[in-house]
Length: 173
Image (cartoon, rainbow, N blue to C red):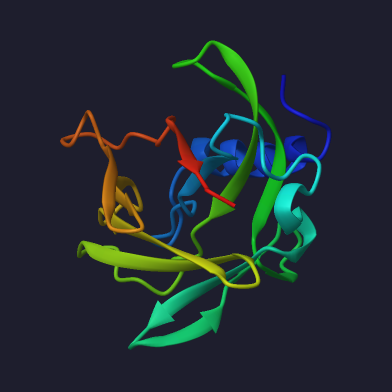
């Protein structure tokens, strides 16, 4: 079951996904990430080893420079570090898992071309991960690499298909 805090974020994403594109705009893609320790416990539910969800920051890598991620919320207000936390059902494990739903603010890309999009995720002091996605022109995620490892490929490359897989990342400490 999706938690109370994640419902508004996912509602906005799902609402946006069902709208007809206007002026060449599409909803930004979202990646659901489940962070665990080496024994399979959720990292961000109880602050294990200084993993505190309120301290996570996301950045875009633009021309080799980090830029703080931001997007517009439903009311047109700028929201920095656009992600939400909550529980989601993982169809691969048949279990509810605690995820970070990271919105990729790709509002400045050319919709007619395909792009690589790099997100730096600062999980805690000294732990900075890199997520690289290959975005199709209609803002669908075709491929996703996390710390250089390919973890997702769109199973329907010829169609607009929202990424529904939860990416599980294991951290040592």
